[in-house]
Amino acid sequence: MTSITKGFLDDTIQIPLDRIAPTRPLSQGLHRTRKYRTILASVKDVGIIEPLAIFPDSGSGKQKNYILLDGHLRLEALKQLGETEAICLVSTDDESFTYNRRVNRLSAVQEHNMIVKAIERGVSQERIAEALDVDVKRIRERQNMLRNIAPEAVELLKEKMVGVQVFGILRKMKPMAQIEACEMMMSANRYTVTYAKVLLAAMHPDKLVKPEKKTIFKGVSPEDIARMEREMERLQQEYRNVEDTLGDTMFTLVVAKGYLSKLLKNETIADYLDRHHGSMLGELRSVMDAVGADTRDLERE
View 1 (spheres, one colour):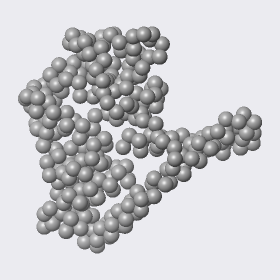
View 2 (view 1 turned 60 degrees about the vertical axis):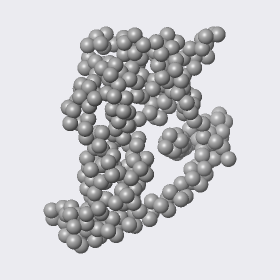
View 3 (view 1 turned 180 degrees about the vertical axis):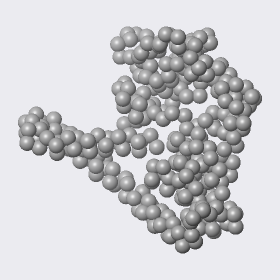
View 4 (view 1 turned 90 degrees about the vertical axis):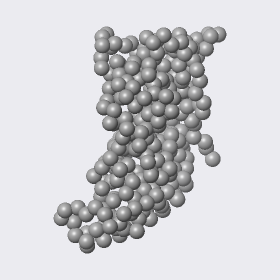
């Protein structure tokens, strides 16, 4: 069986700032922008939450230097604050497009963890709100966001761009129902409040914390609710079936992709397909790229 290459090394490392080389110049007037001032204040008060992403520079000689793949503003903020080192993640691939496909922006769960970690270090809610340039009410909401949320549900959504209101809806469900709802959101790739409300409305009363207060949408009849419940149970079963066979399916696709990649490296074959079956060859390459992207997504998850 072929193994999937890791995108980053397992452990973070501390690297001197003078050994990290940026890959793009910073714009003029950067220090006056609101985005940079927010990052500067956040790094000053809370510290670096998301490590810099770097790649070893093979041409750096005896002293090991690194190329910066992501985190240019954080690096500049650290320099302005007089710091000498930064916590970094070491990438195994220096291609920026590959790195960008592996990176997510700060999700709601990650933001919650950042705030909780800062508060545990003695930083007040007011200070965090000032550093992030938001209302202190938002900080309190983020701090209590995962109250009564099942750990398994949190794990499923930890890298997803989910609104805070979604967790309030999940809180109305029992733990197992929360997990089912999260799996449904992942299956549909929809993490909106509206979709979460639909899942709540389709939940069987036995799966709710307070069944007597189940939300009923205007214009939705009891027959509609019953039909939605049956549909949700059916989709949940289909999700489990797909999940059970996903590993074997991905393995088959990866093996097929490897074979086709080697086949298309043959210039004679590639030229023939390009001349006589150009559209098919384009579709084939698109499918191969999609398999590669799905493989990287599975590795990250």
